[in-house]
Length: 50
Image 1 (cartoon, helix red, strand yellow):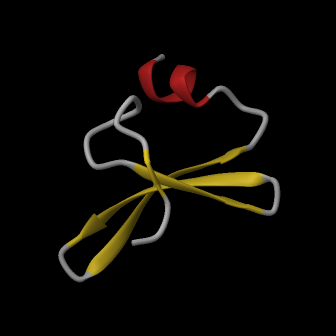
Image 2 (cartoon, one colour):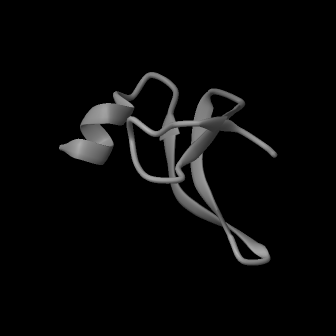
C-alpha cells in the first residue's frame, strides 16, 4: 500500500511526498481518491482541522 497512514488528520487518510509537496489521499473501491495536495511547508493539521 502506498503512503503513510495519517489517522491524526482523518479516517483512512494517507500521505506521500512528491517533489516538495505532500499528496493526501484515500483508497476507494478500485480507485485512489486524492483529497488534497499541499506544499510540504504547509501545516497539514491546520488545513484539515482549521
